[in-house]
Image (cartoon, rainbow, N blue to C red; front, side, top):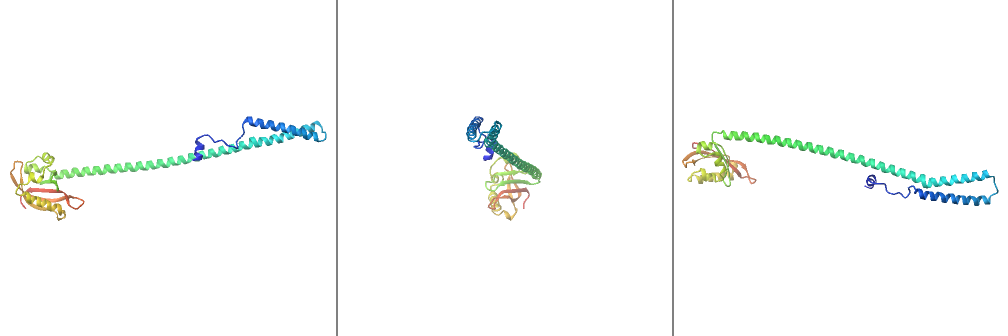
Length: 256
Protein backbone atom coordinates (compact mmCIF):
# COMPACT_ATOMS: atom_id res chain seq x y z
CA UNK A 1 0.00 0.00 0.00
CA UNK A 2 2.90 2.35 0.73
CA UNK A 3 4.29 1.78 -2.76
CA UNK A 4 0.85 2.37 -4.24
CA UNK A 5 0.57 5.67 -2.42
CA UNK A 6 3.97 6.69 -3.71
CA UNK A 7 2.99 5.74 -7.24
CA UNK A 8 -0.27 7.68 -7.17
CA UNK A 9 1.06 10.81 -5.43
CA UNK A 10 4.23 12.85 -5.35
CA UNK A 11 7.42 11.32 -4.04
CA UNK A 12 8.05 11.95 -0.34
CA UNK A 13 10.96 14.17 0.61
CA UNK A 14 14.30 12.40 1.03
CA UNK A 15 16.80 13.56 3.65
CA UNK A 16 19.60 12.37 1.34
CA UNK A 17 18.35 14.35 -1.64
CA UNK A 18 20.24 17.19 -3.29
CA UNK A 19 20.58 20.38 -1.27
CA UNK A 20 18.94 23.55 -2.52
CA UNK A 21 20.92 25.81 -4.91
CA UNK A 22 21.18 28.55 -2.29
CA UNK A 23 22.55 26.16 0.33
CA UNK A 24 24.97 24.70 -2.21
CA UNK A 25 26.29 28.18 -3.06
CA UNK A 26 26.79 28.94 0.64
CA UNK A 27 28.64 25.65 1.15
CA UNK A 28 30.86 26.14 -1.86
CA UNK A 29 31.57 29.79 -1.00
CA UNK A 30 32.41 28.84 2.58
CA UNK A 31 34.61 25.99 1.43
CA UNK A 32 36.46 28.25 -1.05
CA UNK A 33 36.90 30.89 1.63
CA UNK A 34 38.27 28.39 4.13
CA UNK A 35 40.42 26.85 1.41
CA UNK A 36 41.96 30.21 0.53
CA UNK A 37 42.57 31.04 4.19
CA UNK A 38 44.12 27.65 4.84
CA UNK A 39 46.17 27.81 1.68
CA UNK A 40 47.55 31.27 2.57
CA UNK A 41 48.48 30.03 6.04
CA UNK A 42 50.09 26.91 4.56
CA UNK A 43 52.04 28.80 1.94
CA UNK A 44 53.20 31.29 4.58
CA UNK A 45 54.85 28.46 6.49
CA UNK A 46 56.50 26.92 3.42
CA UNK A 47 59.63 28.21 1.69
CA UNK A 48 59.03 30.71 -1.11
CA UNK A 49 58.12 29.05 -4.43
CA UNK A 50 57.61 30.32 -7.97
CA UNK A 51 54.28 31.86 -8.90
CA UNK A 52 53.48 28.99 -11.21
CA UNK A 53 53.95 26.62 -8.29
CA UNK A 54 51.55 28.62 -6.12
CA UNK A 55 49.03 28.61 -8.97
CA UNK A 56 49.30 24.84 -9.38
CA UNK A 57 48.94 24.23 -5.65
CA UNK A 58 45.94 26.57 -5.48
CA UNK A 59 44.27 24.97 -8.51
CA UNK A 60 44.92 21.44 -7.24
CA UNK A 61 43.48 22.17 -3.83
CA UNK A 62 40.48 23.95 -5.40
CA UNK A 63 39.75 21.04 -7.74
CA UNK A 64 40.10 18.49 -4.92
CA UNK A 65 37.84 20.40 -2.54
CA UNK A 66 35.21 21.23 -5.17
CA UNK A 67 35.22 17.61 -6.40
CA UNK A 68 34.57 16.35 -2.87
CA UNK A 69 31.88 18.98 -2.30
CA UNK A 70 30.14 18.25 -5.62
CA UNK A 71 30.28 14.50 -4.99
CA UNK A 72 28.93 14.76 -1.43
CA UNK A 73 26.29 17.43 -1.94
CA UNK A 74 25.32 16.99 -5.62
CA UNK A 75 26.32 13.75 -7.34
CA UNK A 76 25.65 11.27 -4.55
CA UNK A 77 22.23 12.77 -3.59
CA UNK A 78 21.37 12.99 -7.30
CA UNK A 79 22.17 9.31 -7.87
CA UNK A 80 20.19 8.39 -4.75
CA UNK A 81 17.23 10.41 -6.03
CA UNK A 82 17.47 8.77 -9.46
CA UNK A 83 17.54 5.30 -7.88
CA UNK A 84 14.60 6.19 -5.64
CA UNK A 85 12.57 7.40 -8.59
CA UNK A 86 13.48 4.30 -10.60
CA UNK A 87 12.26 2.12 -7.72
CA UNK A 88 9.06 4.14 -7.53
CA UNK A 89 8.52 3.79 -11.29
CA UNK A 90 9.14 0.04 -11.08
CA UNK A 91 6.66 -0.21 -8.20
CA UNK A 92 4.16 1.75 -10.30
CA UNK A 93 4.71 -0.58 -13.27
CA UNK A 94 4.29 -3.61 -10.98
CA UNK A 95 1.11 -2.12 -9.56
CA UNK A 96 -0.22 -1.52 -13.07
CA UNK A 97 0.61 -5.11 -14.05
CA UNK A 98 -1.15 -6.38 -10.92
CA UNK A 99 -4.21 -4.23 -11.60
CA UNK A 100 -4.32 -5.31 -15.23
CA UNK A 101 -4.14 -8.96 -14.15
CA UNK A 102 -6.90 -8.44 -11.58
CA UNK A 103 -9.06 -6.66 -14.15
CA UNK A 104 -8.48 -9.47 -16.66
CA UNK A 105 -9.34 -12.13 -14.05
CA UNK A 106 -12.44 -10.22 -12.95
CA UNK A 107 -13.49 -9.77 -16.56
CA UNK A 108 -13.11 -13.52 -17.17
CA UNK A 109 -15.17 -14.23 -14.04
CA UNK A 110 -17.91 -11.85 -15.16
CA UNK A 111 -17.94 -13.35 -18.65
CA UNK A 112 -18.20 -16.85 -17.17
CA UNK A 113 -20.97 -15.76 -14.80
CA UNK A 114 -22.80 -14.11 -17.69
CA UNK A 115 -22.41 -17.29 -19.76
CA UNK A 116 -23.82 -19.41 -16.93
CA UNK A 117 -26.67 -16.94 -16.43
CA UNK A 118 -27.53 -16.98 -20.13
CA UNK A 119 -27.46 -20.77 -20.11
CA UNK A 120 -29.71 -20.85 -17.03
CA UNK A 121 -32.12 -18.44 -18.73
CA UNK A 122 -32.16 -20.58 -21.89
CA UNK A 123 -32.69 -23.73 -19.82
CA UNK A 124 -35.52 -22.04 -17.92
CA UNK A 125 -37.09 -20.93 -21.19
CA UNK A 126 -36.81 -24.49 -22.51
CA UNK A 127 -38.41 -25.85 -19.34
CA UNK A 128 -41.18 -23.24 -19.49
CA UNK A 129 -41.85 -24.05 -23.13
CA UNK A 130 -41.90 -27.78 -22.36
CA UNK A 131 -44.31 -27.21 -19.46
CA UNK A 132 -46.49 -25.02 -21.66
CA UNK A 133 -46.64 -27.72 -24.35
CA UNK A 134 -47.35 -30.41 -21.76
CA UNK A 135 -50.03 -28.27 -20.15
CA UNK A 136 -51.62 -27.58 -23.53
CA UNK A 137 -51.51 -31.29 -24.35
CA UNK A 138 -53.06 -32.31 -21.03
CA UNK A 139 -55.69 -29.58 -21.39
CA UNK A 140 -56.52 -30.90 -24.85
CA UNK A 141 -56.73 -34.51 -23.60
CA UNK A 142 -58.96 -33.51 -20.67
CA UNK A 143 -61.28 -31.41 -22.82
CA UNK A 144 -61.58 -34.12 -25.46
CA UNK A 145 -62.11 -36.95 -23.01
CA UNK A 146 -65.37 -38.84 -23.39
CA UNK A 147 -66.10 -38.71 -19.65
CA UNK A 148 -66.52 -36.00 -17.04
CA UNK A 149 -63.21 -35.07 -15.40
CA UNK A 150 -63.39 -32.90 -12.30
CA UNK A 151 -60.52 -32.23 -9.90
CA UNK A 152 -61.35 -30.80 -6.48
CA UNK A 153 -59.53 -30.03 -3.25
CA UNK A 154 -59.74 -32.90 -0.76
CA UNK A 155 -60.17 -30.52 2.19
CA UNK A 156 -62.71 -27.87 1.24
CA UNK A 157 -64.00 -29.68 -1.88
CA UNK A 158 -63.68 -26.62 -4.10
CA UNK A 159 -63.39 -27.17 -7.86
CA UNK A 160 -59.83 -27.02 -9.21
CA UNK A 161 -60.56 -28.09 -12.79
CA UNK A 162 -63.47 -29.44 -14.80
CA UNK A 163 -63.72 -30.32 -18.50
CA UNK A 164 -66.58 -29.42 -20.83
CA UNK A 165 -68.26 -32.83 -20.45
CA UNK A 166 -69.90 -31.19 -17.43
CA UNK A 167 -72.17 -29.32 -19.83
CA UNK A 168 -73.02 -32.44 -21.82
CA UNK A 169 -73.86 -34.62 -18.80
CA UNK A 170 -75.26 -32.18 -16.24
CA UNK A 171 -75.94 -28.93 -18.12
CA UNK A 172 -73.62 -26.67 -16.10
CA UNK A 173 -71.47 -24.09 -17.88
CA UNK A 174 -67.84 -25.15 -17.52
CA UNK A 175 -66.33 -21.71 -16.83
CA UNK A 176 -69.13 -20.60 -14.50
CA UNK A 177 -68.96 -23.81 -12.48
CA UNK A 178 -65.16 -23.73 -12.20
CA UNK A 179 -65.21 -20.10 -11.04
CA UNK A 180 -67.63 -20.91 -8.22
CA UNK A 181 -65.69 -21.90 -5.09
CA UNK A 182 -68.56 -23.77 -3.51
CA UNK A 183 -68.50 -27.36 -2.25
CA UNK A 184 -68.60 -29.78 -5.22
CA UNK A 185 -70.44 -32.45 -3.25
CA UNK A 186 -73.25 -30.07 -2.27
CA UNK A 187 -73.57 -28.71 -5.78
CA UNK A 188 -73.53 -31.99 -7.72
CA UNK A 189 -74.31 -35.00 -5.50
CA UNK A 190 -77.86 -35.70 -4.39
CA UNK A 191 -78.62 -35.41 -0.70
CA UNK A 192 -79.18 -39.16 -0.29
CA UNK A 193 -75.83 -40.14 -1.91
CA UNK A 194 -73.78 -37.29 -0.45
CA UNK A 195 -72.73 -39.06 2.80
CA UNK A 196 -71.46 -42.08 0.86
CA UNK A 197 -69.63 -39.84 -1.60
CA UNK A 198 -67.93 -37.89 1.21
CA UNK A 199 -66.96 -41.14 2.92
CA UNK A 200 -65.26 -42.38 -0.24
CA UNK A 201 -63.49 -39.00 -0.63
CA UNK A 202 -62.24 -39.26 2.96
CA UNK A 203 -61.02 -42.80 2.35
CA UNK A 204 -59.09 -41.94 -0.83
CA UNK A 205 -57.70 -38.86 0.94
CA UNK A 206 -56.34 -40.85 3.90
CA UNK A 207 -55.21 -43.89 1.86
CA UNK A 208 -54.35 -42.64 -1.65
CA UNK A 209 -52.17 -45.71 -2.32
CA UNK A 210 -55.26 -47.91 -2.59
CA UNK A 211 -55.75 -46.61 -6.15
CA UNK A 212 -59.04 -45.77 -7.88
CA UNK A 213 -62.32 -46.19 -6.01
CA UNK A 214 -65.29 -46.95 -8.29
CA UNK A 215 -68.87 -46.31 -7.16
CA UNK A 216 -72.15 -45.12 -8.63
CA UNK A 217 -73.64 -41.89 -7.30
CA UNK A 218 -76.72 -39.88 -8.10
CA UNK A 219 -75.78 -36.47 -9.54
CA UNK A 220 -78.09 -33.47 -9.88
CA UNK A 221 -78.31 -31.61 -13.20
CA UNK A 222 -78.52 -27.83 -13.45
CA UNK A 223 -82.30 -28.31 -13.54
CA UNK A 224 -82.08 -30.42 -10.34
CA UNK A 225 -82.90 -33.65 -12.15
CA UNK A 226 -81.18 -36.82 -10.82
CA UNK A 227 -78.67 -38.61 -13.10
CA UNK A 228 -76.91 -41.83 -12.11
CA UNK A 229 -73.21 -41.75 -13.01
CA UNK A 230 -70.45 -44.28 -12.54
CA UNK A 231 -67.68 -42.48 -10.62
CA UNK A 232 -64.00 -43.18 -10.14
CA UNK A 233 -62.08 -41.32 -7.40
CA UNK A 234 -58.28 -41.16 -7.33
CA UNK A 235 -55.55 -39.05 -5.73
CA UNK A 236 -53.86 -36.54 -8.06
CA UNK A 237 -51.15 -35.15 -5.78
CA UNK A 238 -50.13 -35.68 -2.16
CA UNK A 239 -49.41 -33.49 0.85
CA UNK A 240 -46.08 -33.78 2.74
CA UNK A 241 -47.86 -36.07 5.23
CA UNK A 242 -48.80 -38.56 2.49
CA UNK A 243 -52.49 -37.66 2.17
CA UNK A 244 -54.26 -36.78 -1.06
CA UNK A 245 -54.24 -33.04 -1.69
CA UNK A 246 -56.37 -33.09 -4.82
CA UNK A 247 -58.91 -35.73 -5.82
CA UNK A 248 -59.79 -36.47 -9.44
CA UNK A 249 -63.41 -37.46 -10.15
CA UNK A 250 -64.05 -39.40 -13.34
CA UNK A 251 -67.73 -39.89 -14.20
CA UNK A 252 -69.71 -41.42 -17.05
CA UNK A 253 -73.24 -42.61 -17.49
CA UNK A 254 -74.03 -46.05 -16.14
CA UNK A 255 -73.52 -47.95 -12.89
CA UNK A 256 -70.65 -49.94 -11.53
